[in-house]
Image (tube, rainbow, N blue to C red; front, side, top):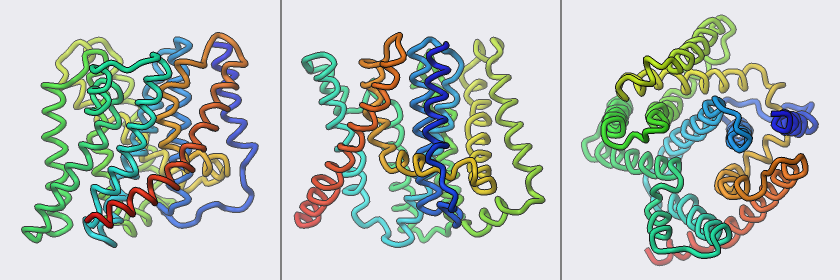
Length: 344
């Protein structure tokens, strides 16, 4: 626990040592604000996952907020992209930006850790099965968004009708996951995130209205209430009555845990910029996806019962992620996407 406390102090120090006096973002849901919050999100994942290495229990929900932020921004980003480009190159961009980096890191990481890759491991990586629930989750979210958008375009749905259709699809997925695919150890892991992606789309559909609501001082009571709902729901789901009850009850309550707290974090970043106005967060956000992929292996290999391994873990994870980001931008995002466009 002592080492984990030191680790926490190091991360906090990095954030605030590189704080900026000048405001790094002014526009609501700008690239800079979402980038900083992505940096905050991946740091919560690094912090919580590393804590698990030290046997610190009960902090996984912090990483859940980070994951929810990524999903909110994914829904928001896809909706904003659709306004400009429609569904043009939709799957090419997802394949190049998400799938290929995942395959590269996971094949190399598995090979380095195990010194070989058997057929079962290779198939699991290719199918994104039993190796990383979030990547599989985000791909399914892309499929749902693409399907909903295709149907909505064909039948000329309004934005409201399209959004309702999207929410219905996620609710159906919620029930399917709860009854057939819930993981016994963490049955709520995916279920509690089911409204995060649609919330991002909702923000995009009503950006000015949401912006005004987030910024008005008189609405602070609503965000305090939202935070209370998240904390209260999180608390009651820890009781054995709910844990030992049906997955449906636990997962339904879990919907009111992570997303309300995520909305509260976005509100904080909008109205209390001093807490997030850090160049380190902005930099971290720019390599957040690579950090997420790399930490899955580096924390298992590097973190041991010593202070130096903590520092080594941070340095190595950030260094590899930054290098990968440059390589992906140069050789995958640009070159491969260009070749795919030429083929089509």
